[in-house]
Amino acid sequence: MSHHALDEIEQLTNKALLEHGADPFAASEVARAVRAAEGYGNKICGLYYVESYCLQLKSGRVKGDVKPVVTHPRPATIHVDAGFGFAQPAFAHGLTPALEAAQQFGTATLAIGHAHTCTSLGYFTEQIAREGCIGIGFTNASPIVAAPGGKSRIIGTNPIAFSVPKASGEIAMHFDQSTTAVALGKITMAKTMGHKIPLGWALDAKGQPTTDPDAALLGSLVSVGGHKGWGFGLMAEILAAGMTGSVLSKNVKPLKAPDGPPHDLGQFYILIDPGASSVFDAHVMALQTAATQDAGARLPGQHRQMREEVEVDDRTWTRLLQLAEGA
Image (tube, rainbow, N blue to C red; front, side, top):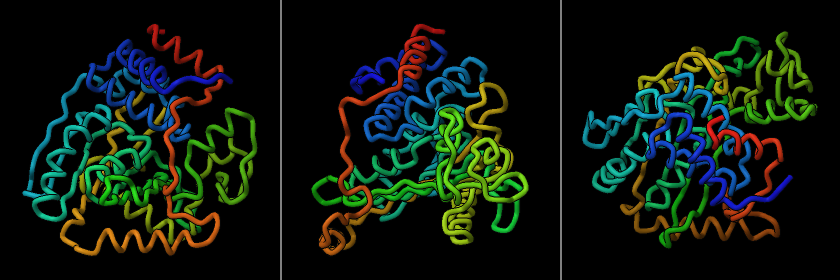
């Protein structure tokens, strides 16, 4: 293990993406997202994905040189066609008009269609909140979740994210979570490291609980809270696919595979301007005070801190250096 500054991580990631075919804007937006993921300790959405980004740029599974197309089907409805490119630059193109619509009408939606995986969904809702709006986000992913009582993969881990602003411009509350007991990346990381997984995370191909990550990857993940999490996963699926024109999870191939069809995933955001409520900030602060009255208690995301230097395993760092040189 070695320690590296976020500036260095962002610069090398940007260089690696450029070397493999991304244009400067796409490369900078994706590198910025990788930086944030690493800085917040979200390893699954950080450098862990950079090699697959580069290999998929080379194979054409993700297009690094497309310009997202922004349309306004209705005054408070913003749609961005990512053109089978990265989600990060597509969101960047849609954020400003979506914020303007939310500020004018109180509520607006931002649909990102035909995009690569966005990895950290909360990275985007946090940007909405830092501009003064409540951000709610949904996305879908490759199929790995069966209906309760079943064993056939129907939907993905299908995360939901929620970010709430303070009047001061800070974040009052923030969470980003899969609708499964655990994110798929934790299973794949356990496999890579040769670790077992806890019971309750996954089922094998026969629908039986397993601690073997290989068996889990051949089976399905468990929805958090059983049928309750399954319902939230379906909600995310309907919004992420149905409202963006992107594919259903069941038709998405493994996200990190170097070859194959584009991800064609969707992300759907709801932006709410709390300015119409004269008591919004006071109520948020009162809730925060009540929730933190007990030692160790907090609101989700309340004490998140961005680190400027993080630990990276040697194998990941060596591969990043190789990718930055075009290997």
